[in-house]
Length: 274
Length: 244
Image 1 (cartoon, chains in turn blue, orange):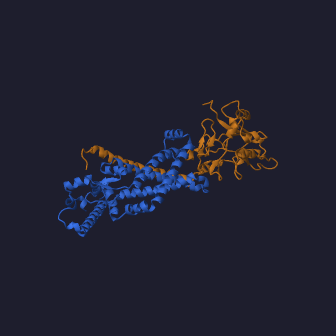
Image 2: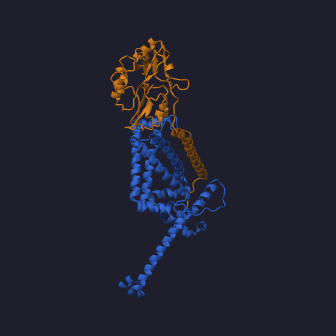
Image 3: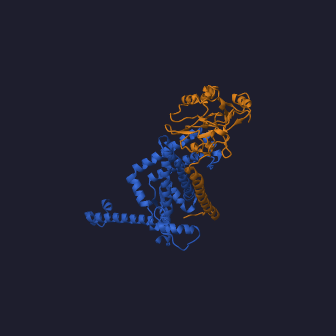
């Protein structure tokens, strides 16, 4: 694929300053809303988990949060109130933007194709220092790793939300065993998302090569150079779209040029007027 | 600390006639739903052979154990041992009614309130204690079989009764001894067949503790180490003045 080829200096200069839109406002807002919810839910949820038999959370954290919120009951109330807000807003976003954002996003950005499968085979080997010679297949707007993490987040959020609702509305659940199983399911889903989250935050905010991805979560745009290097398939599709647009504009221009009678004059129209 | 309150019950089994006024008083005081109870009177059945027959009634309720299995298993700390009084209490505002504690209690002293979706049990009537009364079951006991008070206070009813009895028994076995705080006097519990069972743990709790926790910890550790290795490499490489 041509993204590995040498790019002349002038072209590189142009690509470095040119921006491409990667995220729309709906995505950016939903992302940072999720961040805020996680920042509130994870510390309080951990503090609630005080069973000595599970014994995961340091007692100082349990006590700190209980004192901060005024006891176990208020801590739990805060946790499920924020959780409810999270679920309501997410549901509202999905329903409101179902056709405009959700379906196109799922269709165009989330599905794994053959290149992604190949990427998933090669990338882990390369991270272990193997298969250096094998080329990485070009990636779309999200690479296969990001797509997999997205599946984990979506599945995890669904499980977390569902089990959270079961526990919040426990008074209406006639089967105690359902509540009993909701606890480890909630815990495991959160744990797996957090395991991915550690990589996600590192790759997104600290890893130097992905610096642009971090800022794109605020501005919505990345440089064309970054897009070409990291998301070649997407970049070339965008380039094609742009070329088609240029072609269309030029064609329109040629059409209007040949149909306008004054266009036959050798001078530009505004020059003739002066 | 010796001057700290350590509430407990002393039950004189020789004085219980199974009238169950305590059950009625408890239900009225605590609005216990029909079909459930916070307290019980157990029956040993006829013991011995004619003409040496005996029958013992053994009032029970939550034992407010020193090392309660119910507190150990409670996810959120909704069930806790009150450090000020030693009572085992349920914060029903925090309880989500999962019932792990109901399974864990060796004395079956807890039940799930289906109306409210929370766990309920004897809490020694805190409103009555607040104004200096004894719990409803103790106040109503005609025979004076049920006694309640501070085991650390030598002048309390329970301490005096214990001192006078010359020996007490608790419902424990070699396998199950969570340190119950009901002391039975003037009767033989060994023959009554009331041994506590072993604490039970649900499949969900075992899966959580034995599988989910190690799995999640491994995943998080792995992911953290991977990130840390990459970050270390990044630091060692240093930052470029000019980056593409």
